[in-house]
Amino acid sequence: MVKQQAEMKKGVVKKVKMTPSEAIVETLVAEGVKEVYGIVGSAFMDMLDLFPTAGIRFLPVRHEQSAAHMADAYTRVSGVAGVVIGQNGPGITNMVTSVAAANQAHTPMVVISPSAGTPTIGWDGFQEADQVSIFSAITKETVRVTHKSRVADCLRTAFRIAYAERGPVLYDIPRDLFYGELEDQILQPHQYRADSRGSGDPALTKQAVELLKHAKNPVIISGRGAVDADGVDTVVKIAEHLTIPVAVSYMHNDAFPADHPLAVGPIGYMGAKSAMNTLKNADVVLAIGTRLSVFGTLPCYDIDYFPKAAKIIQVDINPRNIARTHPVEVGIIGDAKATSDEIYRLLKEAVPSPDKKQYRLEEVSKEKTAWEKELVDLAMEDGSPINPRRALLELTKVLPDNTIISTDIGNVSSTANAYLRFNQTRRHIAALTFGNTGFAYPAALGAQLAEPDSPVVAIIGDGAWGMSLHEVSTAVEQDIPVIACVFNNKSWAAEKKNQVDYYDNRFIGSNIQAPEFAEVAKSMGALGYTIEKPEDIGPVVKEVLEKRKPAVLNIYVDGTQLAPPFRRDALQLPTRLLDKYKHLDYETWGSDKN
Image 1 (cartoon, rainbow, N blue to C red):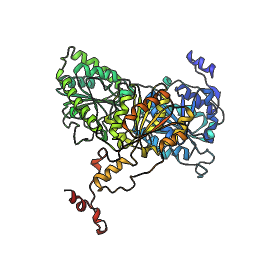
Image 2: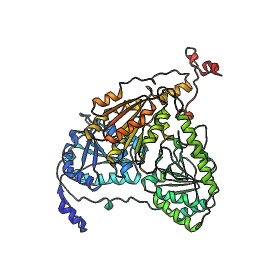
Image 3: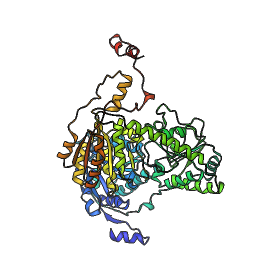
Image 4: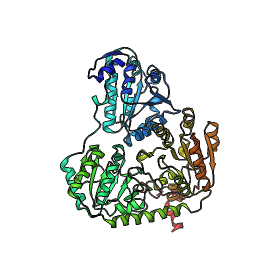
């Protein structure tokens, strides 16, 4: 293999004899894969045996769902497609939820999926499942290895599609095809895939510049695509050139520096009123690297902020996302950075000496100041034992600027959207629109592996923590110093809020009991802290940051101080038609409150 690599540098590529396992591993090496996540299984053990010599670290988790969450976050932070693997059958099907989440998060990933051996396919043998059918709807593609000579070729196809279409790809290989002998060549990524789609149609880019040039109230929405393409710096230049306020898309608070005078904050559920009040008056919206998701543009705080009459310029690498949810004036299919660079170049030509619109800066400052005050005032209301907003406020005060924060799904995790501010990219790792609980902690582990020297904190509710606390063992075993901040209100609080607002405080299934999480963490070898006073949060976080060990902070918060429901648009007050259930009808109990 060394000889072959030397020949490749000279431009000479020859096929050499190798085993299928060697061909797979060398393709992973060529792709820059440093870690593979999963649980050991006999189906891929021949390949696994090669990992240490190849320089690939196998990260054994406690549940395969965690593996794909780790890979998801690793990719978002590093830019390198994550790789997961599991035993055929249950090991692979355990990843369904986390692969589906990565698919909706547009995260490149390769799922190495050993399947039943070719002599036994279709016999419903031990641990057999039709994994291709199961994953076909939650991946960008399913690639099946049909012959041992195709193992490297099919894996290259998996990586090509994962990067090109921004999502997970299933690489399904019958377990007997890891063995044998073949002749093949190991190609470098540039030989079989291209990473850039350029800056889009020049005519459309010029049209976008004309719209921005003549806009009265332009607003930029910067999204995940700008982060992935390393294009945020250019978004800053566009904003500064024409003095355009910039919002960030839902749960991508790292898509524009929060301390910039033109930053107005995040839109979407529990975002920033400063962003919403700014966006609602826009006549032109430049949406860079965002699909403008339905959920991420819904009204919030009773503000229907997404402008109905604005002319939208949407830049996205995926043609499927253009005008998918909102009609556009100009749709540009292109890389977020390359397109932003071209827009900026043309803007400087079209408007070489723009007037600095001081009134826009003043309006942004006014909106941000008012929103900041509201957030602090809400946080400083007393809670029993701690107002969850106060806990978030105290936490964010002490975290270093380069901290990576992962957030789960739930009432407190979503409230964090209003309090999280980032001045660097690839810092905000959120569960996004698949909305599965149990995401934040394994995601934090993956993020920490991608950036070992940065602090990493996971914000999780106690319900979601029950789905992920087993991975504390992984953190301890692998020495991954993530800080889990468990906001413990003894409930599935997002659903509890629905029962408060729509079901007259009839709490069915939403109140939960749990062990003392700090003590559980200690028993697993991690640091554990129980916090019941807001003033203790800062000192504890500082202490843990210095120790650089896996830690669990069990923060008890008030279970009655809850954010509004996630989906008011999808909820209705109850109507009951059978006499037996009439007492549950809103007309019956709601009249007492009117």
